Amino acid sequence: MVANIYPVNLNNRQVLAFFTDKDTAIINYTLESLSISSFKALYMPRQGHTDNVQILLKWQDTRSVSISDAVITNLKGILIGVKTADCLPILLSSKDGALVAAVHAGWRGTAKAILKKTLDIMINRFSLSADDILVAMGPSIRGCCYEVGPEVVEKIIEVTGQGEHIKNTNTGFYVDLCKANTRIALGAGVPAENIWVSEYCTYCNPERFHSYRYSKTTKRQGAFIGIKLDSEENNE
Ligand SMILES: [Zn+2]
Image (tube, rainbow, N blue to C red; front, side):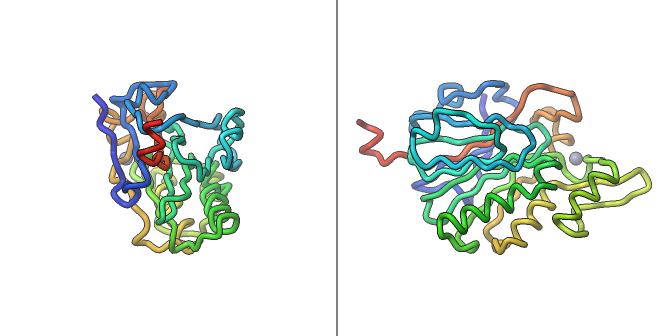
């Protein structure tokens, strides 16, 4: 059984957005496996902990799959998504539902500010104001469990500055990718009330979510968002 999580700020008449959990024990997602009929296609990039952002403006653009860790589209009827198992999935939409994005941010992507890069493209290329962008951060490993080395902390701080997303304890350094990326979104001008944050740490909830650190699994949950087809187009 699928028990998807639907962030309340992103789902509306135009946009469908959800995070899957472990019940969708799927490696290669398809529209069929997700039981989704209101979309014509599914696009997921080949992820590589890069800061490459793939922009899909024409259906032609969906034919080649590049190595990237963020996708932006204004096309109706295509569901875009990223896969994670501890890394942070981030879904974004403009308030008018005309532009959506999906981002995969592990510590490397966070340290490369992939979310900032995605927001900059949404703002500059698509003439949005940061106030008009809605953000949802999905289940990921959180500050309670994500122990990292000092070199990781150093790289993240270069982008985010110090803050409560980094904890230095007796046992080591802990990073909260969700809080780090929330800081990045706030820093780019997105208002706090536009940001939805999942309550779940993947490592704390291995019965519900895939956690690479917990089980070294190759399975991933998915994070998906898309602009729905108009109902008449859907009936064509
Ligand atoms: Zn935890």
